[in-house]
Structure formats: structure tokens, C-alpha cells
Length: 315
Image (tube, rainbow, N blue to C red):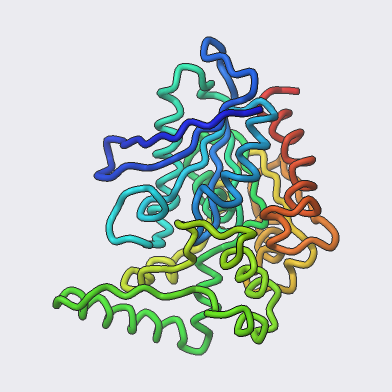
């Protein structure tokens, strides 16, 4: 059975620590060199949820050194303001994590892959465009957070209105008002049901019940810096820069949900510069089935492990 080391680290370009769990293979020997995988949690989540409880242990059991990390400003990682969801920082975190991995004598710096779930999958696409030490890319129900935020704001001037409101919020806080945090999910299961949207309904079930609830998995965001997400796009330039081996896993029921993972997955698959790319669509699986369900995450792993083995081990 794999083992876990709880670690923190800080790189030269940081003023805060990143907290991570290092999952080591059952037969781990520090005198050997191992392939490694960086695992990124969803939006508003933390390493104690699907990234570090489902995917990281499974990959470690398959023979990888796996690092499941909390994004800067979130979870147990440092950074102020708290609950900041800044895509530029989220993408930069991948390079910070790789910087740490390559200092570990038992990690093969030429055999590092990445796996991201939901928004972490979208950030994985974006990171891999410029971080070429990531040699293979896997997204699990990956979503483009910038697009999600723009669609929530609405068309016909909704995004510009949202940006103006954020500017007003920043002005208020610069003049001394307390920072404001927004809830991303409805307040009750009944309110979630009333949306009629499978992603919102199942997000509430995952994050607000014992199924997936964790102290740091809040799905809450600091409001005054939301402008960066509204102006960001995970798939910009993928046709030029995303050239690593690429596996995209989605559920066919995700096409019905507000988070748009089915649509985003197909878009990236079609546009990515990768010549070695695959898309797997799991029948009757929803966005959140791919977080932790046997019919979802379990089936995804039956494809993920062989994909990574071939690209990072030459198996």
C-alpha cells in the first residue's frame, strides 16, 4: 500500500509555502529513480478531496511518486488574500511544484506528468502550454474556469458589468472595508435541486455532504480579485503550444451540466497541437462520477494508468 508524506515547500519566487501530500509507491526505494505525477484539485477544492483521496493514491499504487498540492491562497497553502482564485497563480503553481519535484533525488526529472480534475484539468492544459517539464497531460472532466465565469456573468454586457462591480469592490476594500467572499454553490440541497442543473446538484452533494466534504474544500471565492478569471481562457493557444501527449477523460452526462466539461474536453482534443492525443467518453457518467465513483473515477483510472505508463515508462 502506498504511503503519504505531508510536506510544505517554498521556491525562490514565492513569499508563502505550498502544502502538499507526497504519495509514495508501496515498494518505494529512495535509492531508485521514479516517474512522478503532479495532481491538481478542482476549483474551490483541496488535496483532501478527489485529487488526493482518489487519483493520487491510485497512481502511487501503480508505481508513481505523486504530489497532490493545495493551490496557493487555498487549502493549507499560504498566500493572502485567502480563497483567491487567480488563474495566473494557479497555472504558475504547476511550475512551482515541478521545481520542488526536481530537487528530490529519487524523481526522474525527465518523466513527470500531470493530472488535473475539473478546473484543475483546465489549469493543467494551460500549464502544459508553457511548462514543458510536464511530459504527459491528463485531464479528468477538465473545465475552462474562465469560460464558466463568463457564462455565469452572462452575455449582452454581463461580463463588463461584473468587472465594473469587482472594480467597485476593490475600491471599497482599498478604502478600508472588509474583504468579501462569495459562495459558488446554493445554500441548500433544495436550492441546488431547483436549478435543475446536474453539475450544480451533484456539486452540492459532493462538497456539502459526507461524500466529499473537507475543511478546506469550501467552493468559496474572494470577490475583489475575480476579474482575472473573467479575462482568462484555458484553451488560448492550445493549437500552438499544447503539444505533449494528451489524454482527456469526460463523462457523457457532463454535456448536460453548467460546468461544460464535455464541451471543453472536445474543444481541447480537436484544437491541441498534440499528435499523440486521446479522448475517452465514459457512458452514463457525470462530472462528479469522475471525482470518486467506481463508474467514473474507477473506469477513468483503467485508461489513465496505461496511458501514463506508455508515455512515462515506455511500457
